[in-house]
Image (cartoon, rainbow, N blue to C red):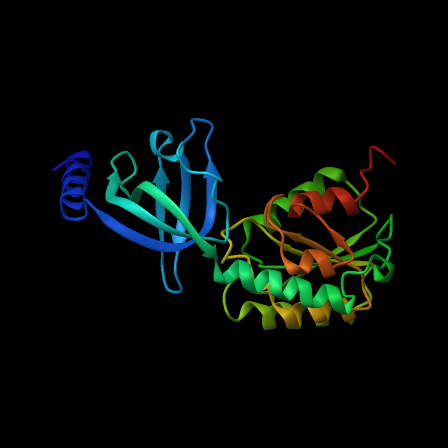
Length: 261
């Protein structure tokens, strides 16, 4: 049997047994494609599933859904033959309420803002010509490799780079990040870059931890928060001394180029 034949049989089986399904969950990631189709991940407290709502159906939905929305969907389960990807095809969509993750994020943001942890007057100045820079991230991350590659391209050889390994996802990530930040802060760096590449809302949620936010606020060393993509905002972005839209952007912001100098 060919792969395409197996995928076709699996698709037929799924569509036959799950042809009219009601599904509820929270959007953790969404892409509005140029074709007009919506591609998004729907999750609950234990699992997630890839979903798509084609232009012919979503044109009747207003306003457009966004990350954090709780949705009630109606549709069917299918399989995209080209990649073998299992997915839910939504034919109708109704927004119910704000999702748990988004509600927690907004509640903590409001709390810390009232306490003054985001005040611009408390932000520390970043050295224009750093001599010692710490990067707190996962040693195995693609984001770290992108950052190191960009540093090399800038040829700014007056600076020493130190990497502090940490978890950047999951339940144990906040304490791991706190420990790495605390260690870096004791070593006399000019700036600490807290970095992680892109991911879903739940992947990045460890950077919305209250204890992590309070630790960033109390550090002696200036901190640059460089988490996810440009559209991603986490609590560490607000409490840090500087927010970079991406890890690579953080390097552009704090490292001068040899050519420019």
